Figure 1: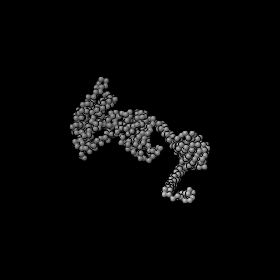
Figure 2 (figure 1 turned 45 degrees about the horizontal axis):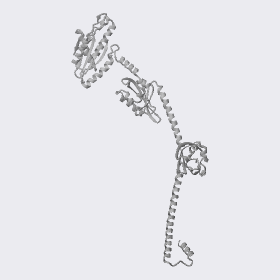
Figure 3 (figure 1 turned 180 degrees about the vertical axis):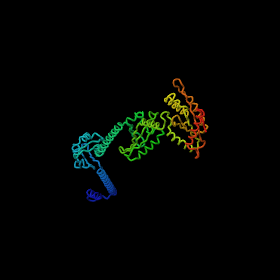
Figure 4 (figure 1 turned 180 degrees about the horizontal axis):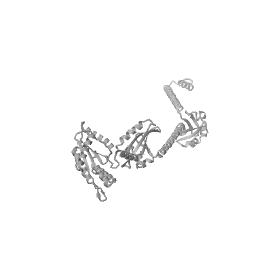
Length: 475
């Protein structure tokens, strides 16, 4: 600056500058101004250098970010010219950097993809839009998420994200859901065709499926059964056994023999029905399920009860037969021994029973025995054991009963039997009994055997008959 000022002064004053103090001060101030200007220019130059460097750095960072993005991006100006293309990581690339500065609608991907062309129509009027569309490139079809955003008044950014894999997964998932639904329908059809009740639930016993027969079997509505825990359908006495078998079935390897148990289920919320449960587990759709088959065995149980009654009781009087009586009596005597209870035995025999058969016929004799048995049962204590030993001879075991109490009970029986009124052709059939009663006050290890007790009681019956019949004899 000083050299420039010196040249200018030489041009203005060829003969030399005037020697004037004010002129010299003016020249000095101009020189200072030049120095100040130089300093500001240097500061400005350094600031510009720094700003350019920072801007370059930021542009470089932005370039690196754009290049690292997996999505394909295109910068578009207001005239539809592509200003910059980033191919992204889609392989093979659906656009090329060679297409930079081309018209947007001249790009092969836009020409071959009607959905994309429609998406970009009037793009300069839109601030932002998003859609999932199908595009064509490299003779392949892609599903992309297309995003168009207005970045400035003259610049738009189009981003294409490849979602083909996700779409394929969605399609596979949809197929899997459809297949699962089809399997469930087939399973439902299968269980509906079964002539027994079927209930399918999760390990926590939440019901997931029942068949059409189950509501008919138990008398509940479909919705009631579906919303009810199966445990509550079983009587309280049988619930522990059911839960035990549930745990066993869930722990059994798949395909093993089903667990079975007989329980009483609530029928129409108040009555009960005997059923056989068959429990097994399967794995369906990756989850363990419990299958409970419910078979009505009420008729079988009733048949078993009748067969058991036929095997244990006298078919005429329904009292225990001799064999069952001895078995039951043995249990009763052991109980008396264990608790040190007294025990009494009553034997009774119908008086003149042969005459009844001879005079009135065997049907009347049978009626006599039936009426006698019914009368005795009406007076028995709950724990007494009543049996017909044969012919017109009966026995009653009386646990936890003293001899005195047994004698009073025998007298009550004698009076009640004598009062039975059976008439044949206006003629009353005579009916009395002779009874023998024996007992023991303690049931220690020295207790007489039942055979000895029976012999003593039989002797008492003989004495009752010898003494005139229709009486009680004890010892």
